Length: 295
Ligand code: G1P
Image (cartoon, rainbow, N blue to C red):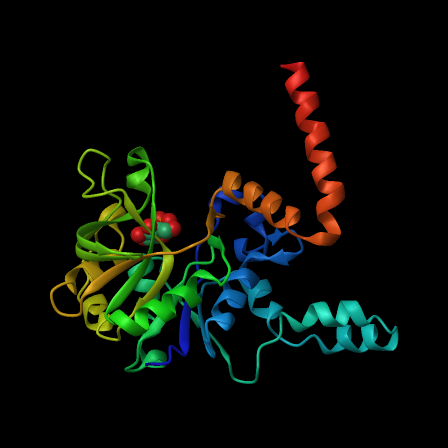
């Protein structure tokens, strides 16, 4: 079994849907309950065995880069004050020496272009890609589930979820040749198809395990949907040679690239935290019954 050791995190997006918050704070730093969004993707990757974290970042993301750095002054103060819980909370944001590399995507030319930046660092081994906007609440995490499934089928693997037909134009969508359990064997993949021409309703969600062969395809990419260099197009081109499967993960996915998804994820994660759930549940149910009475 090939150990998937490296993961790419495209974090160059501007987060325009979260303005004005994202005017001075990278969207990956917006807190979902009490942890920044990026932490969820990093934790999921760690659980799946990832050891090398490659962020494809952009100008204006300094806070994200600082987040995984040591904060010596802060740690010293907490230690002197005996604040053990606060120190323990900081542990999550720590990376082992040399585990994090931050690249800059100079031009926002698309997801395919972002992943291409990591070519030299990945070399010739299969690797993961996680889009931190897609938060997946799963036990185990979606990437760990995929790593296990990938060990059996190899090739390129994408996470998938069934979506309403009306929503296909927001996703990469699989053209399915056959299915076996959670695995769908693809005969193609198309980026953001209109509902009336979408080959299925199996949408790609932001977790990928890719063979290093993808880099040749990424180098040859021409602009696709939205005029961007699309990762989906590169994967699609590899269907006959590398093989492409969709993995229908077990878990709940939140689109934290949208405000609605972010708010829902906040509620779901808060309800899951023993120290918050009791009071929060009471608050929500009072609130809902007031709203129903007013309606
Ligand atoms: C990206 C991918 C798309 C995928 C989606 C999942 O699109 O290009 O194939 O379905 O992430 O969230 P984006 O949401 O960045 O437009």
